[in-house]
Amino acid sequence: MSVYVDTSAFLAVLDADDGNHEKAKNTWRELLVGRTPLICSSYVLVETWALVQNRLGMEAIKGFHEDILPLLKIEWVDQRIHQLGAVALIAANRRNLSLVDCVSFEIMRHTGIRTAFAFDEHFEDQGFVSLR
Image (cartoon, rainbow, N blue to C red; front, side, top):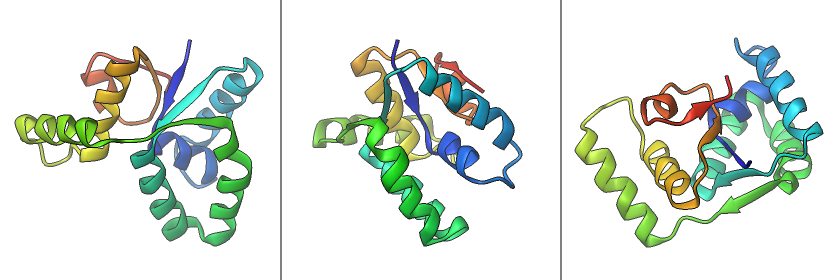
């Protein structure tokens, strides 16, 4: 079973002040011990880098790059997946839903991944199992 990792999980793992930090740290440890394949999109990486750099600084980015990135299989977003995500976002007509979220849902459907490590309720709203 592969698990899709969302920005919300990466932030919770990295930020000791995050309200979900302890739960995230324990879940992350279980995923690593179980050698669970961890997947994320290139869009999640860009979003995570921007938020970690802004909230936690460059040392945290360095740690993410050196320690976490090598553990991930990256699904690179192509034009087709981007377009499917954009159409889904526009159709949803919800201000608090993001393009990154919609692209994540499309990748999960495309790859058959049913489980997300995410603290974002949108994954459950889309019918995915969330490890939060």
